[in-house]
Length: 449
Ligand SMILES: Cc1cc2nc3c(=O)[nH]c(=O)nc-3n(C[C@H](O)[C@H](O)[C@H](O)COP(=O)(O)O)c2cc1C
Image 1: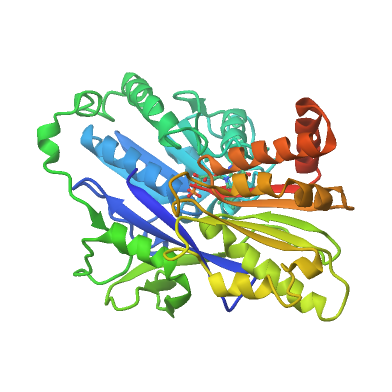
Image 2 (image 1 turned 135 degrees about the vertical axis):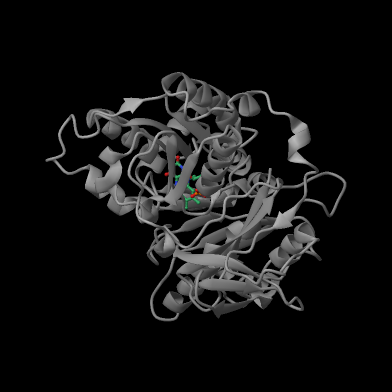
């Protein structure tokens, strides 16, 4: 994978958490991304022009769009325009010939912020079934099949474009965080036929298609790894970026934030002069009422929103009765990445909201502190009786937050096992029950890759 992302909790504002994205470019080819405001308005349609419009919240769709752009350039496309959807005027769409859309999914099946007004425009009733007659398009969506509304924005966009008269170049591609290779598992098999179909439709778009379909690796030169800073000084260059990411994970409370022009937030590493651009957005997790008993599962940076939950419940407990909270946290080592250690330990004693006196509990899985790996799902199984007691209480809610690769599926399986064992119900019944919980918004998974 060519990128990594990191979610950090911004202590001062409990309802927010921050995502900083580190982008590692593995190729010499990189399309520059000017701020949206400095983009020229779309050109009149020219022969061989390809527009790539992306809508991304945490950067993956932008990475995909950039790759599409790089490959089109390599194939000799004379005019590639790569734009975030919110810097493209949707009324210009009928004037375009070929557009590739790359859109991700946020919240509960919602489009990213940058797609919202574009989408609203497309939904206008007066746009008839011939409005996009001259347009040929392809859609690639990014999502996570662990969510109920899997890849909804891409699916809806594909349907709407077709309803407006546009012609599909190729069936939509759907990237899935649950795939062992992440969204790239669907991207690679989608790109080759895209280029071939595009070339069959109009040969002036990709005069050197052979360079994409059968690339000559010599022209790429040596792969080099660099961190790309948006808006940071030209000379900013960090060679040990992976080390920095690792350190940032364990030191997030020490990070400083500067409000520093475009892009809005810069993240400064302690003892480093370099800064990395990042952005802040409001988390989409529903905030639980004090009367709702909670089972929180948040390994790694997944603990970020739960810190806000615990703080909030502590404040509520001072003025009204509150219900118990169980929190399962996981990290590699007790000594290296036990995020917010003192915070959790303080709340787990002296009648804190995670303390046994309050009916709560704090359980940590240190995966690498012993020979055999231990994860949050193992801790959930160890505490099966307590988990079951909470789930049996009125209106309990389960939150699972963190890495999307295997964790949500493993945690769901552990919960199933615990409930089967404690209730004596069949696996089928329990799995149905969890699905009902999900539908009712009482079993919430927020995961990222
Ligand atoms: C807060 C959050 C909510 C998400 N909600 C959904 C969802 O409802 N359906 C879905 O298919 N994927 C969902 N995803 C998965 C993302 O669409 C997926 O990780 C994608 O690669 C993100 O792309 P981006 O970085 O371009 O925004 C969600 C991810 C996050 C972080």
